[in-house]
Image 1 (cartoon, protein in one colour):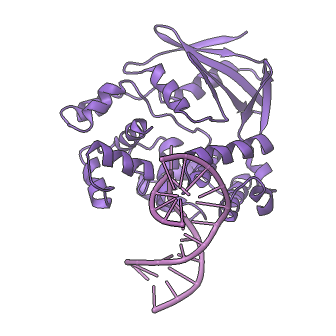
Image 2 (spheres, rainbow, N blue to C red):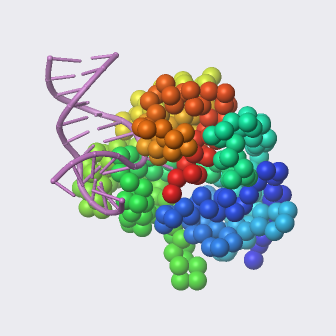
Image 3 (cartoon, rainbow, N blue to C red):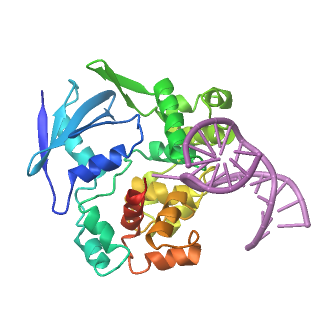
Length: 295
DNA sequence: CCCCAGGGCCATA
DNA sequence: TATGGCCATGGG
């Protein structure tokens, strides 16, 4: 069995990664064990299955199947590094939090928590569409139904480990196909539309990355049907790792801040911006730490 | 039965 | 440009 490892950065807690990946929800794209997480990813034309665990100084990546592609070790290191945001220096964020009555407790309690990404932008968009306006429990149920029906998997010790469906597959579906697994016709419509865009290379991700700032990127993404301000910010944060994203309108975020600041009602937009003021360049991390406080 | 979920589109004025 | 209805379903 092949195995590679990555040096753990300063200010990093693998336990926090595991906690967030679990969070009481049953995510169909990874399996969390007490001391590891098992995940399948697509590499070239095959599915690669690995288990991630830690020792004192390293994250250890163990291959659980036997992929043919060469250079798979480097791909895995690169995937894990991006997925768990291992290259970022968190110390500026923690410095900003120092002395802030609402936020310093979070960086202490969740010390070493890093933003967990969704490297595949198509998957990130689909997850947003699915999650819009429904509770997360039901959202995970919808995602699982879609992944199990249209995704591919590798079996390991009798367990199926799925990767997210390719856009080419979802692009061929009808609205009725997705309604059959409890999607609303709007969600079905949006997802299929996105699948068509991605399968036809209708979104130039490199051009997107080259835009001068996040506002321009949000503007561009909001042209896509089904994508609004919340989804655009979410995708920029989780896929492109833009650090200045605030998921405006996010029910969880608003409720989290309401609880942290002991407000009578959810903050309005002005109050939200006020909460984030002083955290320029770290808004995305602050959002993520607020999410960490939920359930 | 009510309201709300990690929203966004569309019709109306 | 602002507002309200609508979507589908489940949990509280």
